[in-house]
Each structure stands twice: as structure tokens, then as C-alpha cells.
Length: 201
Image (cartoon, rainbow, N blue to C red; front, side, top):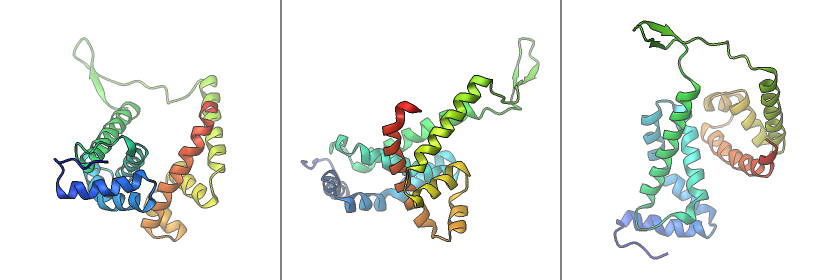
């Protein structure tokens, strides 16, 4: 790839690493993550105000960037492209979270100007919805069962038991960094398996 004349020296050095990554050099991917993991994480933390969510979104951002590495154009810096992917992904996450987590005690004003609390049905699903939800959970567990044992354990603890990274590290007696790195790989494996079973979910 031809180096963009508008890139800074740092941008040009990044481009050399990106070229290696395009050729499948795993060390190049690791180097890009090492360079930008903290800056991406702290940018997302400012947006989301939650350390665990910022961790997850950081991993997702790198996953999306690495999957689209061939789409990167040297007309602008790799860091600019990466931060754009990360921020867009975070905005999507915030939107979805707002929709799914509307406060139950939030009040709105009716036509008479009186505050009215939201009425909810306790979140109960009808029989058909319950069946569909149970089938999805069952299928997801079957997919997770296909992962390597160490990855399966991490996915179960993080996404089924909803433990934090710190809790997983303490429970498995592993360094926090190891837990995060292995969860990143576990999610990649899970995504690959999910692609093969997507039509059944």
C-alpha cells in the first residue's frame, strides 16, 4: 500500500504495521492493539462511564477494525479510522441500552399536564415469547459448548453468570490481563461458530 503523503510520521509507522497485519502477521495485530488499546479504552470510558462496558466495547472495536483491516485507506491515519469505529460502536451500544433500559419510575406528562408513571406488566412473556426465548438460550448454550473448555468457562462466567472481569480473575486465580486477553479470543471463536449456526438462532 502506498503511504499517504498527508500522514504524520506516527501515521506512516502505523501504516507499515497495518500492511503486515493485512498479510496475516498476528504480531502486527498485537502491536496495533498494544499501541491503541488504552487510548481507545479511555475514550470509550468517557462516553459510557462504566469500566466493564468500556472493556467490552474496546474489544469489540478492535475486533471490528481487524475484521475490516482491508477496508482501511491510508488517506487518513489508522488511529482516526480506529477511533471512528470505536465511537460509532459505542453510540450504537448507548442507543440500544437506552431503549432496553428505560427507567420504570420515569414519569411523563399527560394531556392535562399531570405526571404519569409508566405502567409495566412485570416483564412477563406470553407462552410463545417464552418458548422463543428459551430456544434462543438453548441454542446459544449449544454454541458455547463447542468452544474450547477454557474459552467456554470464560464466556459462561462473563455472559451467563454476568461476573465482572475482576471477579473472574479472582475466581480462576488468573491475572486480570490474562482474563481480558482470553475473553477476547473466546469471543472471536464464539463469533466464528455463531456464523455457522446463525440460521438456527
